Length: 423
Image (cartoon, rainbow, N blue to C red):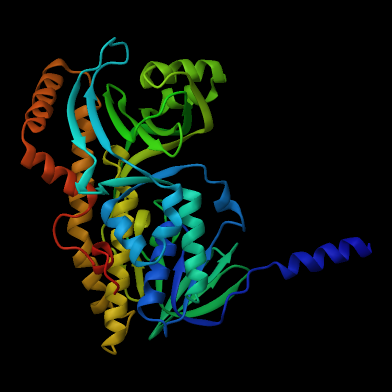
């Protein structure tokens, strides 16, 4: 009985401790939520910032995935003093090739190649393990005075004049001037705020896994357009690569239920043997694919960022980078309003962020949708036209340079952090 009491006392001691009040409350402790909180805290140290996440402590450390970090996002991480700590875990992409073929084709001709640098010594992207990115962002948040609480999902909120009352964790109420929802593509907070979405399901799933191979990849990324969808090979540190393998949802479920030998045989068919023997090191896991765009990014004392505002197809590898753009733009909007003595949660202030991000998000959503529909089929006339188009782009250096700068996030006006400047 005494042991049970001790155990109960320890359990109570570990319960989340949320403050009664704060200036900015971020719901969701993924990289977008953490980057938003850190950016605000560093730009305006006198603002109190809280990050609360529904997952228990330590769950984030089990994420075996990796993400492509565009050059602009790398500049942002450098401006936030994160990049030096991440460099040992980062694999630069030195080259990217694009092919269009069928699974059974013995030869896969290269239709398009991109050099990896957008400037001398500056790759257009790096691959980073999610767990390391999350770890360093958490460390920098703690150093900046951000409070991070796990096991404290938001169960409701109501606006009351200059504040929002947020119900989180074990029925704790926190009063905040601004609530930022970074709780994923199926955002509950977005629904609570009454914000509608445009959504459709592609009937596809993305299979994600880490693959070890015998020979070095030399930093080369590959995108194979296959009839079921794109199969991307993305280089990691060492003789390892991350794959994002698009299949019909039905076929993805079959592959995940198959024995390891069958899965590796199917993988080898798509991956090829150029890097030698393959071994699945982590995964596989599958995630449903669709397009989700929020009709509004803001409401009074409320803002969406990351996947809560937009979920797109991974065909262009831009989902995370769109989220970092949200974090940079929203933080800059909030910090500048605070410096001018304005109400950081007022609708007219938050609408500046919405105007900044909406067009870019819709444009990327439409682009990935069109690319997925164009390349995820096996119609002979469509194949001929798209292969001709890829070949023409490959022969036009200026157009290739334009595309690579777009992929790197360096085209057009950008928030200060994405240019490597502090807010």
